[in-house]
Every structure is written in structure tokens, then in C-alpha cells.
Image (tube, rainbow, N blue to C red; front, side, top):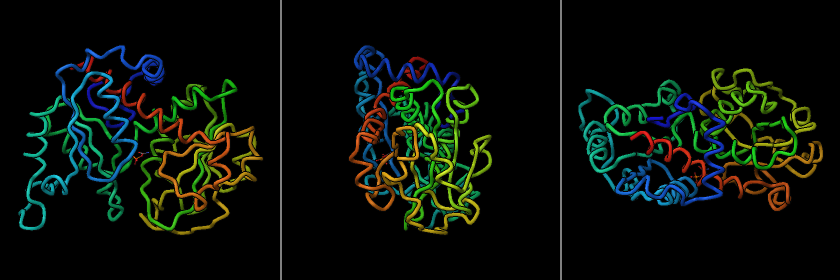
Length: 319
Ligand code: CP
């Protein structure tokens, strides 16, 4: 693995999941791997889990860590090529990425979708510009269309918590008043579809009409607008809100009946509730579910450390 921008950079998901579990059992086994190596964590957007878990994982591997919030700690960065830079962005990504690449051996980038222009977001301009100009490996800390470190942590969590050989995993849309990116849902589909093709899970997606995800992410998943049908016999319920892909970035409904409650969990096979966090209580999922033994959200967030460590370990092994 050179970069970790999407699932396409992963040759063996099973090996990566096992590597995460090995790191969890023995976090400091490879402390010399990152000695005298530095990771730069570059944030265009807010974060709690990604920032802390990636820093912790890097430190477990003996790395030094530098963190920067673009536009607050640094100059605003221009991503477009050949433009007259006479507006608010004082520095171009060509210089910024190249300079950060001189200070860091690995660079992690978080840059969310702007949800204004679908083609622009789905081109993944920030991630690709950094990959082009930094000259060092790039790790996706959540981009416009994907959040692969989250998806790997989700795979690790399902592997640990499953009680049947081939669990039924359901991705359900949850209500929200704000327009949120599709990245977590896209990535979860991308990874679950590969797990489903390998016979590891049965994968179902449920959402109201108008919330269809991009076809390249939905793949062969069974899609239904009937949440009860999807939940029947499910082993894992993965909740997430996303704004419309077709009517790009729009909130088409806030129907509260799509929020997950204990009544919904009763349809499942003692199903465990998952969410990437942060989550707005009682808007998307009830207190009762989050505070019940069925909730996996904290364990899932804890596994972000091990997903980041598995990825960094593989990248460091190839430097
Ligand atoms: N799930 C996740 O990426 O959390 P943060 O946005 O807090 O990093």
C-alpha cells in the first residue's frame, strides 16, 4: 500500500482487519517502525475521533505527529490550477503540499464535500491534488466521497461482534435537518459490498425515496424503501444520515419515523446498533438505543485507533 485514499488501495481486506485486531491485542509491537518518521494530519474540517485516533495510532508506531487546521492555523489553500489568485486563498496546493511533503513522511488529509457542485465533489480534487504534489503517501481522513478509515474500523467492529458466520448488515438512512455528505454511507457500501461478494455478510441498504446513493457505491446491495423489511432478522443496524445525491446536497425529508428506536431493534436478530459518530441523540436514534447493550458506537469509535494503526503500519512498511 502506498496511499490509502479508497478501498482500491487495499489488496487484502481480511489481512488489514486481522492487522487491526493484532494491533488492538498488542499496540506497541511495532514501535520501531515509525521511529524518526513524521505524519502530518491536515484538517480542512472539524474532527474528534479521526484526529485523536490517528494521532494515537501513529504514536503507538513510534511516529512524530504534526496537526494543522487549514485556514485557521495556515493560509487558505487554492486547489484550482491556472487561476488568478486575487481572492481569499493566499497559497496554492502545489507549494503547500510539496512543502508539507518535505516535513512529513506521511500526510493525512480531511476535506469534506462542499455539497454545492456534485461533479466537483466526486472528482475528489483536494485528495488528488495532495497525492499529486506532496511526493509522500496520503491517507484519507474523510474526503468528499469516502471515509475508508471509518469503514475499516466498522469491518473490525463487525468481525469482533458477530454471533453468526454471515451476519445481515443493514445501512439505514436517519433523519436530520442539516445537509450532510454521503462519504460515510458511500464508503460503508463500498466495503460491505466487497465483504458480501466474499460471502462474509449479507448487505441491505434502506432509505426514503430520493436518497439513492451513487450507483458505483450501491453496487449489488439489496435496496429497499421499507425500513421494517430491511430490519427483519438483521444482526447489525448501521445508522447514518446523508443528503440527496440526485437532488445534490438537498434535504428532501426529515421524517422522524426513520429514526432508530427500541421498537425498531425488536424486529432484528438482537441487532447491534452502529454509527460513526458524532450522533444527535433522539433526532437520529433514541437515548434508549444508545444507552442499551445493543449499542456498539463507543467500541466502534475505539476501533478507529486500530484501523488507523493497521493502515499506517502497512504504509510505513513500504516506505
Ligand atoms: N467518525 C468520525 O470520523 O468522527 P470525527 O468526525 O469526530 O473524526
